[in-house]
Image 1 (tube, rainbow, N blue to C red):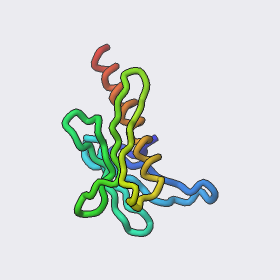
Image 2 (image 1 turned 45 degrees about the vertical axis):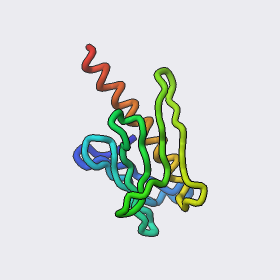
Image 3 (image 1 turned 135 degrees about the horizontal axis):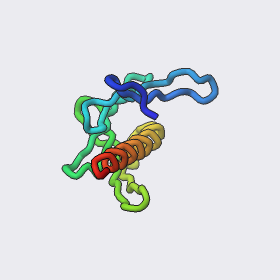
Image 4 (image 1 turned 45 degrees about the horizontal axis):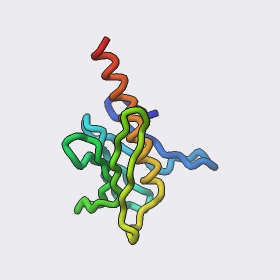
Length: 117
């Protein structure tokens, strides 16, 4: 689960050593944020359309798209991934992107339940 209330973040730990590898920091209320890898590369997680069902990892200050997630599904979560075959990105971005999508979906469902009741 994400940590923090005012400074929301997701900590990525090494399985073997339990050492902190990197931290994803949420930016604003949209669910987007920033991930800085140990090698200094910076990736931004952003919604890339009005409806919030298309998300992408963008790299660097130019915000070049690295991986796109076209999410959907009413009864089950799903995502179609798009990426450049020649792109150099860690597999961590795929797993973290899906995790962030799942957390966002759960938070939206919880907020909807509160509003309905």
